[in-house]
Image (cartoon, rainbow, N blue to C red; front, side, top):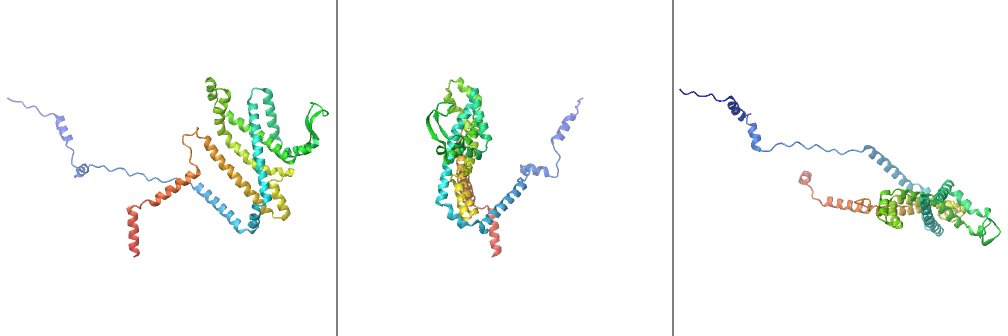
Length: 356
């Protein structure tokens, strides 16, 4: 007698699970194609800066309105402007303005550097003297300083070198009125006033250098002068330069204050001419344009000098305006030379056929 064992239940179920039910041939069709549908890429919508566009539109409108008034308002009197722009007296006043700016900036920053070092020194006497100098010349307005220097002869009729604490024994003696002319008074006032502000600018730049680098240089035995000129000063220059150029630009425009001592710089010369011919607005425009030209030159020089000193701080320097313009021209030329896509060519052809 032979006994046959029944088939296991899991094998039957396994067979039934192994054969998936047919679903109307859709499964076989998708499997046969072998490609699954990819999800559609979301549409990227650029961010719209409505406030920026609105402010840009307002700025363009105001600029266009200003340019329109330049050409529509006859009171500007551009003929008078062109007549006096290269006038000999104007050019002489301009050269005097530039000379006052350069000489006062050189003296002011040299003296300011010494005052900054005195402020950072360990000597209480030097520190106190430097602080007092800076406090006084920043407190007194520049116009008042110029008038004081110009009228110094009322306080000291003579100046010279002699025995201290007396007015009787002079080795060398000068008449103060002849010694302190209007030019000397302007140089003294501008230079000392500039030195007080330059000292704080230079001191702030020196303090911005990381002290760890200075201590490391000391540990390596590098001499103090070499530490200052090779480590401290190049890094401090990045912090000093923007404010220093600001001061020089302010000094260029501040030379117009020396008209108070009757020095014939640019603004004083313009005043003399328009008081004679009553052409106030065109001559003030002449002075404004000359100031703007040299301020622009200083601003361009500031940009390239700051870029030079930023080489050690940034891995890649930002492009200059000329480089940006070249890149824009190259991109525009490349896009103009690029062939049109086939869809655009077909659309243009269909449009031309329809017009025919």
